[in-house]
Structure formats: C-alpha cells, structure tokens
Length: 210
Image (cartoon, rainbow, N blue to C red; front, side):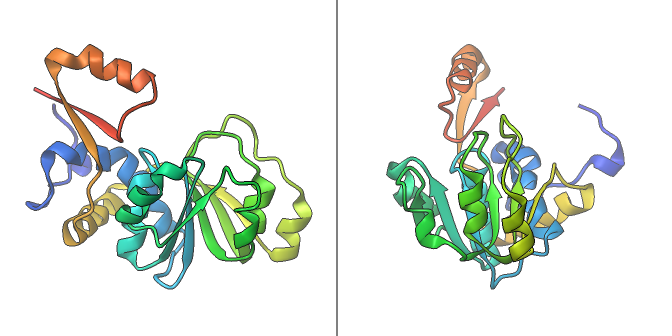
C-alpha cells in the first residue's frame, strides 16, 4: 500500500503492529475528544457502551488520570470494564441506576449506536458538562432545551483526528501500554470473520492475518 508522506506515521517499537490498525479507527475516535474537549485528569468521565470504541475509551481515560464510569446495559460486562480501567460501573438497564449518579459527570462520551434516554444522561452531567457523541445514534438526540440552558450544558460530537493527533495518540499508547482487544483470523477464514462482524459479536475488533 502506498500513501502520501503527510499521512504516514511510524509505529513506536512497543506498539504491536497486529493490533495497531484498530488504533487508527476506533482508537483515534475516542482519543480525539480528550484533546478537543480539553479533558483534565481531575475530570469525572462516563463512557456509554463497552464495545469496539468503549473498551478503548476506558483504557485511554484511565491512563489520562480521570475518574471513569462505564455505562452498560450488560451487567456481565462489569468485571471486564473494571479491568479495562473503569472505577465505577452503572447498569443502565436498571431504571434508577443513572438517576443515582445525577449531576456527577464533567463529560459523558457516548460510543453506543442506539437511541437512549438522553434527558437522563444530560441530568447526570455537572453544570457546564458535555454529552459527546462518537457513536452514530439512529435518531436525532431529542431533549428539552431548558436543562441545557439551566446548567450551561452542551451536546457535541467529533470524527477521527488529525495526523498530528494520531501521532500523539501513538506516543500515549506506547507509554501507557494501551491496546485494543482483538480476535485474529487467517485470510482463509475471512467469511467466518465477516459473519461474526455481521452478527455484532466481535470482541472487540477483528484482524485478518495474511
């Protein structure tokens, strides 16, 4: 593969090349908001969804120094979420679980691609807190404007990151040993890998090996 020199970034020696591909997609997607939003090590940050994006967000935020809370509708993911860096776990399928953490978060990062009760998550933000999207939800985020005005809260989103930010991410990954969880498949099993992807069961990134 050939690419323009402005977009080619050397991998640090300590970064596993077999896992690095996921960093250039999911990794930078969740690292970029930490830079763009000026997330501080003293911030309390929530992560919605513990999947391909969320499992990397937990690691990044933990290494960044934040107090990290994982929101998931799958209670069986709690142990793994804590191993990945979550200090706390909220079972979002429990009716009152999110209400119990109302007003506690500086930033909530949504990596999920589902329609949720956004008003409840906005209520979980501190004054001037931000609900930030990196996952694409099916429907517009409909909510009452008054809670945003009253608490000076905001809703935002971001895509990938610039080459400069990607370079910084790789330095951070190398220093803090952050790595995506991957499943390796030989090319001979590409159909099996694609079927697992279609069924939504990867854990959490699939890698094809030549």
